Length: 250
Image (cartoon, rainbow, N blue to C red):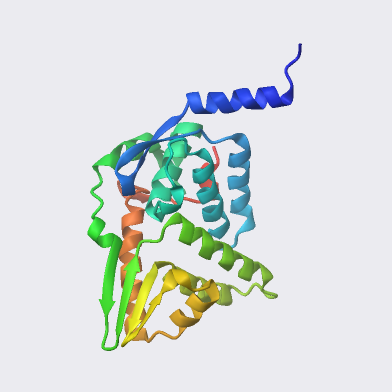
């Protein structure tokens, strides 16, 4: 008797678990099992390189979903950080598709060499959170989780898509605010305290837009420090790999 499509899909699912990948996740300092990238997922990733103009929101949202879909070990990926997304994306590309990557300058890079370095990169956990104090403010900052990143990125993408003129200057201005909001966890202003996660996205943005520059400048300094940590998982020798939809072209 011929197998049905459902039978074949079930078998493919079984094989995807049996032939799983071991991928190092920096924030939990351990190897985690993931299913390999499917052709459908690769196709969707490639589409994000066409969908976007100067931004990687679609890619980041999709990559967050793929991480959640492909993980095998019983771990909540919502608590992973965006640094984990970078490391996982590189490892999935290297182990599911091709470990050879050609940079824009035509330099060929062995991604396995980069992936093998991950466990040796010291992640200073003290830099994953900090408090910024000003005269009347205390702002608690923290590395954005995939859950927060997906929530803000989805909101930002919908706002940009609904913008009538799709003005690049407006888009860049919006993205700056969303980037800042991702890192704010808690604000204390004199005797008033706000847990940022308890607010709607619109409320978070409104509060952030009204913070004084003396505070926001310090927040952006922290954001830069965090992004530098993130880049360390996409850098080999003097080459920084741009992790976007084009990265999954082989």
